Amino acid sequence: MSEQARHDKPEATRQTPARRRARMLAAVVAVAGIAFVGAGVGFVGFLSQLRGVETKPASNADGIVVLTGGSSRISDAIELLAGGYGKRLLISGVHPTNGVSDISRSLPDSQRLLTCCVDLDRSAVNTRSNASETRRWVDERGFHSLIVVTSNYHMPRAIVELSHAMPDITLIPFAVIGDKWREEPWWTSGATLRLLLSEYVKYLAAEARVRLAYIGLEPFPETTDPSAGSAEPKRPPSG
Image 1 (spheres, rainbow, N blue to C red):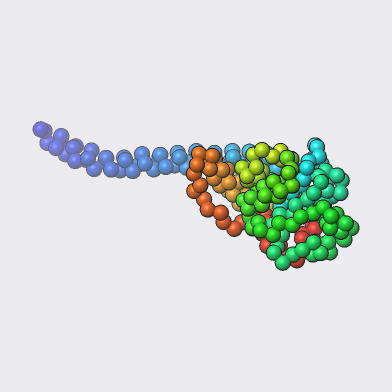
Image 2: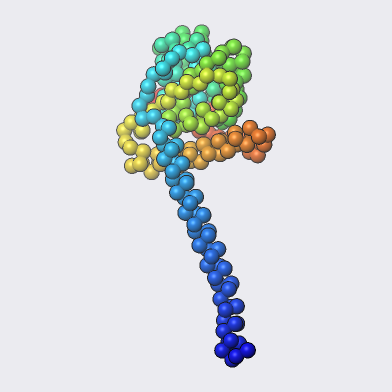
């Protein structure tokens, strides 16, 4: 072996780990880039599901369910009930210490409806348990169709959970548009953008859990989620 060859071989050997690290780094960057683009495309798809204006349901239903936790959800649901869009209303996720009288103080004109045609669910603490308690209510009432009332940003996840809990029930979304959403574009508000990103992550987690459940896996235990059905103040939000 020549002197030159003896010198070249160790150099090539020394370069191999560096080249491997470079290839691994390139692979990591490529995967991260693909994941980032995929997340961005998914987020755009999520946003495309969010309605920007409130639209009355295309048809009536047997019942109406409103998931507490957001601006004007309860008052909008009461309006639908008053308009004859459903026979009864379930308010899911009411604070354990609250009753019809607490809600009627915020909605005094709806006291008759609250007394005759509204049921309160005080057990649900998150979107997943909202769906479980709604399923129980639907079975007790013998309903086959349901108008779902919640905020527009929360609707995709709510439909995922409700569809999983009651696949045989027809769900009709009614998305509530909050005042902030009406007043300014979401991309101009840091708080709204953070809310949407947080909800998107929760939506993906719900989708993943439901898909895994279809094949007999239940990897995610139920956890407290304040976005819907959480502990509300003594008076439901009306703004």
